[in-house]
Length: 195
Image 1 (cartoon, rainbow, N blue to C red):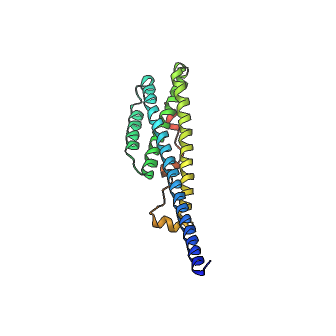
Image 2 (image 1 turned 60 degrees about the horizontal axis):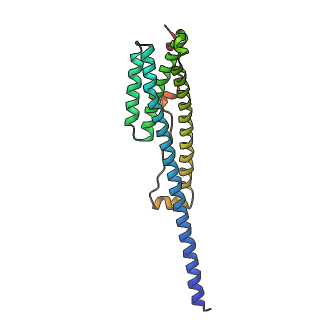
Image 3 (image 1 turned 90 degrees about the vertical axis):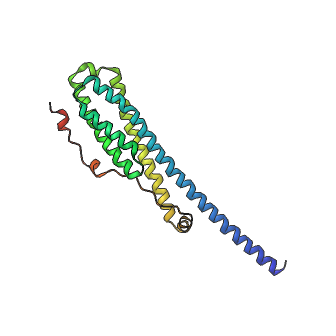
């Protein structure tokens, strides 16, 4: 084999290795980006599930407690804000407001159930309690899954040499799902049980 041929083969091998690395790195970034999108959709899915359950909560509260219109209005407003949220920080803030409204409603409903044994024994009330508790757990799991996918993706786009590809192909850091300031404070439950 001639030296010129060997050099061309060596250059071709180097080009193939570099191209393979670029393709592999790009595909890895795309996969991680899709994991983030999937995890974000799972949060939306669980928030929608909770939103679908809230009318049942509202109906139960209305049925057994006509004077709780303030809570019902707050839940309705919080649901509307969540439906209009577009970014992860907006979703987190709206979700927090909805959590507060739902937790207040659940607390009052539980207090009402303690005072009214017929409500406590109502099968739909029991099922609703279980569904809401299960939904809150699913939402927490979805948030955790999103943040893990976001961490994996953000770490990958910052590591060398993938950071070069990320910059070339406009892969940008994604926001974590973070609790808003108000959600970091313990709710005051005394108001729920004062009659």
